[in-house]
Structure formats: structure tokens, C-alpha cells
Length: 113
Image (cartoon, rainbow, N blue to C red; front, top):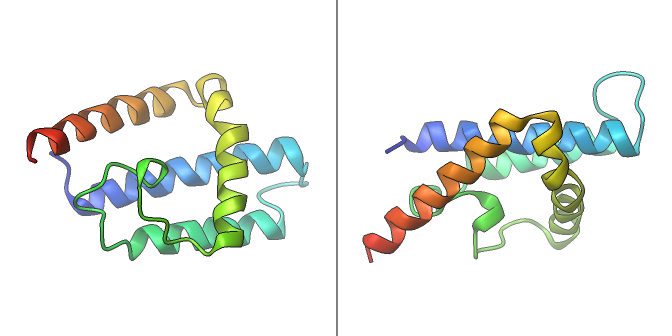
């Protein structure tokens, strides 16, 4: 089982990669992230750092508690809808690891009920 700190780091890595892919393909910045995507990444990472449910949930994408502000939640959903399928082509190891870990975590939580 992963520590809470490891789960937070993995969550932040995945979200950051998805935002980077989204920004690169949609906003075409010269380098790095555009200002809007930087703001979204900082917000998403801050939410992961302070999530009170990290111990009992799988990943933010599977969470039933929506702690993002509505406008930020809609932005992150747009990023996930766009980047999710593309992650298999751009970051296959990370995408597959995320899916496998999510499934394992869901099973673990179901067994502990």
C-alpha cells in the first residue's frame, strides 16, 4: 500500500502531465504552460496537498467529493476529457500505471467495507 504522501505525489504528477498535454495541444505556448494552465495546475496541486480524503479515496478523478470550485472543476474536467485518452500515446507508462493503481485502490477500498 502506498503512503498518503506517495498518493499525493502521483496524483499531482498525473494532473500536471494532463494539463501540460492539454496546454501544448490547445493553447500552443512557446514553452511551458500558458498563464491559465499554470493557474489551473497550481490550484489542482494545492487541492491534492490539502485533500482530507486522500487516505480513503483512489484518485481525484474517481473522487465522489467535489472540493474544486465549480469553475475550476469544469476546467479540470475539460482537461481530463481531452488529455485522458491522449495520455496513452504521450505518457503510456504513466497512464497505464494510473489505471492499474486506481483499480487496485478501488478493490482495496471495497474489501475494507
